[in-house]
Length: 289
Image 1 (tube, rainbow, N blue to C red):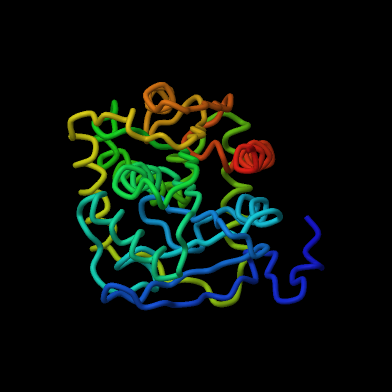
Image 2: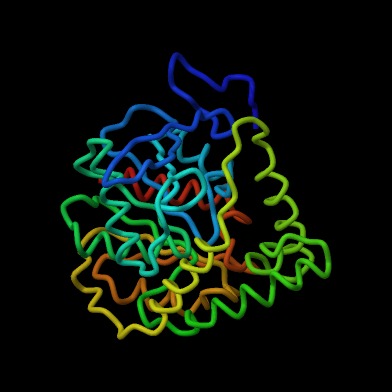
């Protein structure tokens, strides 16, 4: 990637250099970053469990931002945002809507990864007019197979990470094959590219509340996803341990306008492992009339 042309006029083109802004809404000061051309319909990114602004793969963000305005943010109580983190996906969805409306947008595309994909599904159902298109990655529907196991898997791999001095995401997001191991190391290195103005890590309380929310989502009764009329792109790796890949197939089948992309020899972080292909597919999906 050529990082020399990072700012065109006042348009930020690289996530590494995107300044962190704040906006007050609903009693919360939300921390966020935005980059890319000023398009009417931005793509709002919704993060995964334990993630802050610095957990988005810069190749994915920059890839989207080459064509679209991208907004990433910390939800209530997460990273640099104030308040306390809710214990339900539904309350997180309400906070996301509060944030989006505070920025003055009447229509957005959503990219939700993992827990963010659960939040995106709720927003599409509660605020159908706000959402134009949905990209749901590494995620699953309410009551989906194995989602309630995220808690013990996360604990297990956190311990595994401590014992091997590795980031738990190496185990949680990638396969244990040579290709998966390499992709994990490359991804984790990319997350360190930003050196200035880095976000605060998530607090243990927020992390615990998010785990509770995901656990509840996994225990819920399946929802009627036929009410989601927006075009939906569902993407995952074929070996997702966190949110088993069968959930992606299930999700794409149950929404009326679903498309499914599954990457080989890839796990929960398939979109980071196959970032070039993912960005290409996602932009094509978003720009399609």
